[in-house]
Image (cartoon, rainbow, N blue to C red; front, side, top):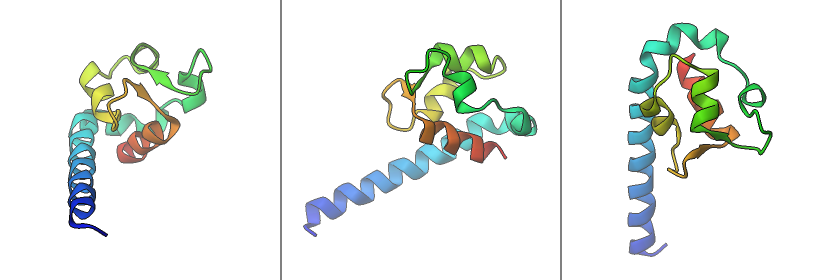
Length: 92
């Protein structure tokens, strides 16, 4: 690997870890409710394969926009099933 690529990968790993820690902090008030978390399919009301912030907040009224943003690891303004499941796993 080139030094530039190694630096990119290292930076990405730090960003992912930072996001995971932030997500854990943002979700900590909701960890007691983890067993009641709806499934991805239940939240994806329009069945487009992603969960919008509106869908997320409607299904989880105790959550906030910051909670959604923390779960949206790649910052594309929607949650994929992997992002949602990672968030749910951190809540357990």
